[in-house]
Length: 283
Ligand SMILES: C[S@@+](CC[C@H](N)C(=O)[O-])C[C@H]1O[C@@H](n2cnc3c(N)ncnc32)[C@H](O)[C@@H]1O
Image (cartoon, rainbow, N blue to C red; front, top):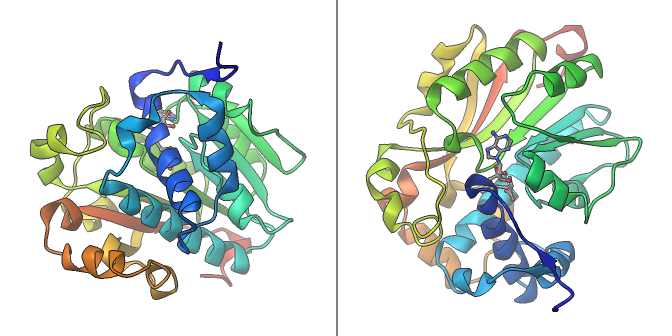
């Protein structure tokens, strides 16, 4: 007996171990991009063969992605300190630990087996509520809506595991129930459809990307008032973050700008412009 916690997760849920390992690996290297002692603690506590992810080149990209979403969410929190952050498909992410401002309301959701694992490491509090269920369930949206806005919804490396029709229904529902909400998530272009079997981290896993979009601006047509405020590829991460990468990693990421694996992977920040009363003064 190793005394470690066994990991029994469904295929999409198992992918949460990739960014977890990435954050732990960079934290162990004392990489300035991110310090995440909780990720190190969780990797050490889990009975899982993390050696399969060791040295994968996509890990830096996964952490860069996390930091872009930290940056956007922290910027929003600075303008909306009493707002509500909703993290969908939270996995074992430590965003609350990294950017919470001591005042905001947080909701974190993941599928039941992933949430069961998460609850061994993170506790709910008066400002922090976890839900076990699917992003496609109705109940959590109603609870989040009833808690009052403004809302910032982030789904990092989650939505593309769902079919497009399901993502679209979710986005429309969020626009109806969370007026004025910001929505941050990543998208893979068609390139990934033809190449995911060769992706260094995802390829050997069972989960498959199901939703592909080459131009995230087309999502504006999904719901009235939905606007794409920002959309960046990883080498275009905000300078404050990107410059934390040590050389030669920085140059290496920059030089991959035209590599389709990099150019077809976008981080997107959308907003419903059907802003309610409390949100009209803020961006
Ligand atoms: C690649 S992991 C990302 C985890 C986390 N967002 C992070 O960045 O560390 C994908 C996550 O999406 C979750 N997920 C996949 N389908 C989901 C669904 N229908 N409802 C809720 N979560 C889902 C998985 O359980 C997993 O935690």
